[in-house]
Amino acid sequence: MDIVEINPCRWPSRTHYIRCKEGRNPVQGLVSPGGPENPIWTLAKKYKLVNTYSNYSSIETFDQTGAVDYSDLIDEFEDTPYSIYEQDAGYILSENLQDRSVRTGLSLAGWKPKKNMQAQAVEWWEFDWEYSYSPEQSSQEFAVVNYNTTFYQYSDENNYVFDERGFSAFIKGEASTFLTKDDPRLLLNTIVKNISYSDSGVTVHNKDGSCISADYAICTFSLGVLQNDVVKFVPELPSWKQVGIESFQMGTYTKVFLQFPPDQVFWDTSTQFFLYASPTERGYYPVWQSLDGPGFLPGSGIFFATVVSAQSYVAEQQNDEITKEQVLEVLREMFGPTNVPEPTAFMYPRWSTEPWAFGSYSNWPPGTTLEMHQNLRANVGRLFFAGEATSSEYYGFLHGAWFEGQAAGVQIAGCLKGDKKACAGGMEKSYSTLHGTTPEGQYNLANGWDVTSFQTYGF
Image (tube, rainbow, N blue to C red; front, side, top):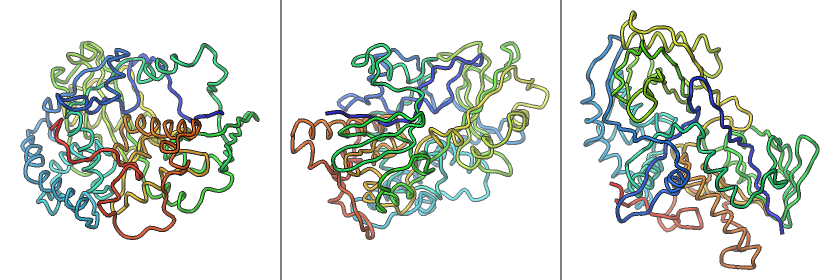
């Protein structure tokens, strides 16, 4: 019996003169006394990934006039409005109520930033920065579930990984336990063009003319790759599967890196985060991070901004010089026009245009049910699907991909061994017709729901 994993993602170990990692690379939610440990944190420790605690209290706030203290708005958001919004999400889940957007939930809880651009910046810091989409585009129910299952189950800690090996350190490390040097079972730089599947096996056809046949396959393409039709499936994926794929969102998270002469650093290197409120555009280069501080890369002169969603698409479509001019204009508003020199290095990735990714990670739109997500997740014949996007509880998180890969592997192993319980008949649950909302009883393992979101280990 053979199993093949179909995965277009590359695990580069690039060392730039700017010394940075391009992706979104924290370990989010670590471990709390009496609670479980995030498996990614376990791997990070095992392979000694260089990382530092992200202190979200270490923040300065700015607008177009320079440094302005509106940090009280952060406290305001995190106090009563978020508590009400979070509690309401629990009612939506447990009482089978209709889902709504995060914007609706926050508004009903009393948080209405409207045209207060400082409040809009705070909201971006609190929400968009995490989910890569705006409150209007995101599910209240599942955004809260997604947050709680990670940060309330494990811990509220985020550790920023700036190891030059990246997460590929533990990918390669784990692979080395069963793959040998130049192992023919591992095909790198091989582009998949066609996947034929049935109830008896899977055949993968590659661009170079080669093909692989196996009894089972696990497809870990990103949601972005699946949505861009770059791989042909034969037979065509059933309509319920196609609707599941198209119903979810692929977010883009773009980090724009600048490196300045170490003797001309103009920000407080003891501060980790800097929040900028544009007077005209929400989410315009709003969050800045320093890698020149204690615990990171002192003396590096590295400062970077993050944009998501529409701002990511704009930045990734325009040339470097335009983007550099825009971010320098923002920095000179924040720190003064004469204090910000020209950078010695500048770079950023273009995730939305990468043909093996087409984005960064997934998001759950409002009003989209758990059953619809299960259709995204479910196998077709002997072709299984896994990745962060197929995780109902941890979508967008690296540990979501870990759990989903494990689940698919365990099920296939059960089928190979004749374990009827683990194999579950070789078919995951799917829904050809969907109606309304999700009853509470459907939040179960058959729909990828493994833990309750009503936990407080890490709270």
